[in-house]
Length: 554
Image (cartoon, rainbow, N blue to C red; front, top):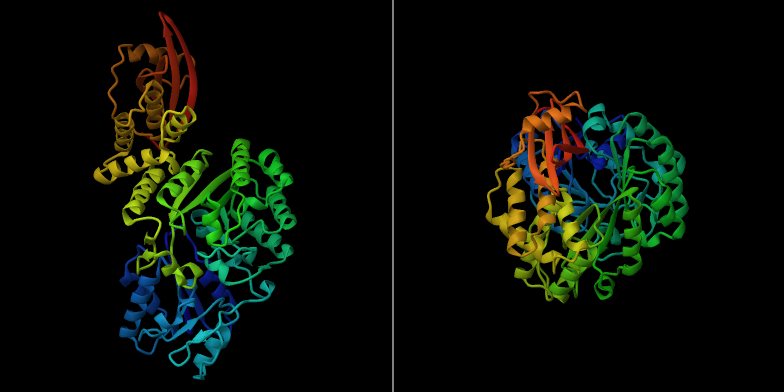
């Protein structure tokens, strides 16, 4: 085979647009194939699969999450067959050519976008010609210019690379544009200027195909999906028309929303179709300006609140720990201010000093110490010590476990909305410390840690107790580890509820706990759990069905 493109994805559910699109670009006179693995796959399995195709060239797509595995594979491939040509491409290698081309087992590096490079390269290799392209580095030439595909309509669509298995089990990626109108100094998108777009007619055709083939989730790769208001709204309304029942994810800049867009997504857009990923990074102007970010934080947070209150779109917000001039106290302030709007997800990320970015090149200016291995994550800087960064790492773990995974959102919202706690960050930090010290054996352990920490910090009350029971019992379909000390006979409750629901039989297992002014009653059926709130006044029973959870069986 002439060339095998290899992607090593972070997870199985991910797909690699890079290798799929490159394979589509290869002239049919050449023999090509793409292979996708996950970082958890064994190196031996990857080697065996690659070598089974007897490739002349192996092209690797390189990112921060896979570069170490890529280099190990490349080294072992050369050990097995020194004649295999190893070609690297992707953002991790495009902006630090010298570091990678100097490795003895790397032959060439394609810098920038590869769609228009790949055919001339394969032809030259097969004809044993000298490789002399302005965007491909070799042992003799490493001063190259990243390649840019000027007109995106000249490259094929990715849609026909997706299989039935992809549609059913994996995230489908699609792009409507490349480039970003902004120039944040920590982001690789700042290294190119302007935005290039795919024509709307092609996008409509492609998306219709993906939707007709029942793609569950389509994630758009565009760096700022709403850079053009008119185009953005046209695409949204098109998706509403043809994409009912599907989920679409975008990265957007909410600062660009005017009143018309805010009103549309707050009050009119089809509910539960769209997920917006919004970077806030810091609430402090000095910090954002230091990395060339322009942001009206007050307006941004008000817009976030409107969209959350509108309950029509899902919001994922991002913060970055470790930006220039942001001290520990300032970073805590950023976290607590953004957390108070209660987004559906809040990602507390840590600055990564990526190869090629301005912030990495000027790292000494702010005293950055960062990990030498990918993803080059912050250790400390002039404004935040290593110990302070570690506190954020612990808080981030608890944030993910309890809030983003929806184990106990209701408890945090109650505590903050009712001014029960002094610092949400301190609560998450203390939870993170306890999590790091505890071996988790089942779901109940998470809730026991949560209640223990809340009690220790003096925040526990009757409402927290009720919310603890509600969260634990409604989010896990297993029979609970809690002991029920209810004197009320379960047979009496079972008989009462059975009068109103014939699915509840004399032998149906039920579990009861004190809840609010009555009881929370769980009825375990074959394929679902029924949750009732029950009040008893003498011989009088009042019940309300509050939740139904479908299960595969208990």
